[in-house]
Structures are given as structure tokens and as C-alpha cells.
Image (cartoon, rainbow, N blue to C red):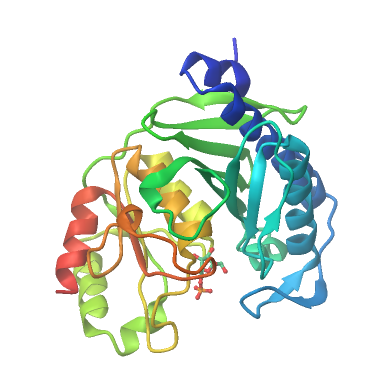
Length: 305
Ligand code: P6P
């Protein structure tokens, strides 16, 4: 007997407002998945807040999520990687802030590679000043051969659900655990090894130790590899061009930090600062990230000392 997401969230004690908000996030995932399979590729001749060209799919996914968050009447503040400014909604039923990357790695989709949506959820109607520890929940949806939702509720673990053939998510894995070390590594931003000899040495050492490379160029599937296998480390350190790294703190690193942390993993900058200890000072700010098996993250931090 498969268990629906709503039944599962009731069983683990998720309060009704948050359950309802997550239900709307799941509906957005269903509609995004339908849009992806409809084949709307190509560029939209617009740019996002970071000056990156937007695909039609980026704009459509952003619109789908914004619409569901507004319809929930629970989201007071919605902040998208694809929009410069936050959107404020009337939220008579409750008050949450949702920061999201609607379609991370979207440029990989026309190569038929997996991509994903990432969500961080806070209480209240402000994001600036909030820390990663202030999140009440986080989730990602990976659109691949299977469409999977991985969700963490603060203090209640990390769980995986699969979208069935009618677009509903049903539980597949409960209380996922990440072991302390791995035989895999997922090194992003390899261009940094040109000038960063510490990164270069770490990757050489791990390669010489016989580690297996697992890297697709999409943060969501690459971190899902760690979640799926129960061990691994994803890295995106800074370089001379991206001095704060490339990935965004609020939309990508904090939500992934909660998800991996609730599974017993770790997430920090290459300098060793825990991602969840950080607070948001600017909604589009970026940060370097090392995330995954605790001992591997510690080894990577030590390599940069
Ligand atoms: P690079 C995708 O564009 C993304 O935001 C993440 O999903 C991914 O981990 C990273 O950028 C890849 O960056 O510099 O290798 O293209």
C-alpha cells in the first residue's frame, strides 16, 4: 500500500498550515513536470536577476510556482532566483516565506539530463536576517527518469517520495541516512583547480584513492546522487571569477543544507563555515559549498586550511 504525501506528513506530525503549503509546492512540481514533457525549449529573450539568459522553461516554472504559492494563501513572501525582487502575497491562512530556484540547471534539459526545483521555507514574511537554522522545511524535486520529491521538515528527518502516474507523490524512502564517508565525489567548478592548488591536490588525492566521479552539472541530481546512495560529497568552491562561489545561499545552499543535515550529513563553505549558521544579508547572495558525508566534508575543509 503506497502512502500519499499528505498522509505521511500527518503521520510524522507536520502542522496543517505547513502541510497545505507543501501540497501547493507538490502541485507546482506536477505542472512543471507536465510542462517539461511538453517540450517547450528555447530562450525567452529575457535575463534573470543574476543577468543569466532565461529559458522559456525557467520563466514558465517560475510562474507556475508563484501562482501556487499565491493560491495557497499561506505564503506572505515568495523569492525566486528568476526575479530581482520578492513577491508579496495576501496570506490570510498563515505566514510563510518561500525562497526557491524554480528550475535549477535548466540548460541541461535539452541534453536530456535531469534538472530540479529547490525550495526553502521559513516562518514569517521576511528573509533578510534569517539563518539556515530558521528554516522550518526544505525540499527539492528532481525531474529525471523518475520524478522524485525529497523533503525535510526541521527536526523530522529527510524523506523521498515519487510522483505516480496521476501526478501525486507517494512515499518511497523514510528517514534517509548519509554515512560519514564515501567512495564517490562530485567536484564542481573544476576551472578553480587552475589557480587553487589546494582544490587540485584534494581532487588528485581522491582520484588516486580510487574514488568514483559522479557529476552531471546539475546541483539537484548531483546532490540527489548522495541522497540516493547514502554517501557522497558535492563541492562548488569559489574561483577568481566567482569569489563567493556560484550557487545562491537562500535558494540553493540553505535548503540543500537542511535536507542533507537532517539525513546526518554536513554542509559548509570551503572555509568551514556551516551553511545553516549563515544569515541572509542579500536575497541573491552566493556562497561556496561543500555538502555530503561528514568526514568527507571535514577532509575537504582541512584541504583548504
Ligand atoms: P558550472 C546549474 O547552472 C548550476 O546552478 C547548478 O545546478 C550546478 O551545480 C552549477 O550551476 C554548475 O555550474 O559552472 O559547472 O556550469
